[in-house]
Amino acid sequence: MPQMSPLLWFNLFIFFSVTFMLFFIINYFLPPFTKTNLPTKMSKMKKLSWKW
Image 1 (cartoon, rainbow, N blue to C red):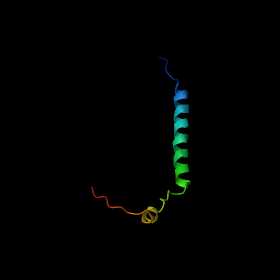
Image 2: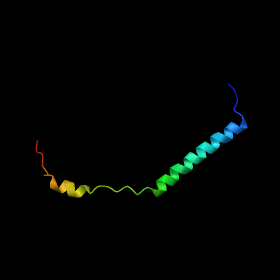
Image 3: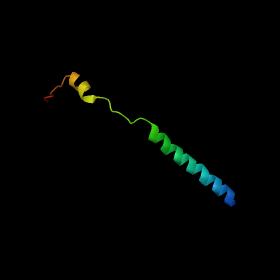
Image 4: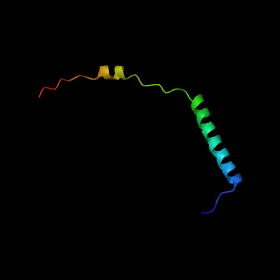
């Protein structure tokens, strides 16, 4: 198996570092996830009591 030259290892390190930083920067600036209001939807549904 051929060995990678040090310059290629450095390029690989830079590539993954930039990808890692971009991932965190994008996640920082994205708006936070907001849940839909589930209790209001559930209140409209008719609750049934099942008797077996």
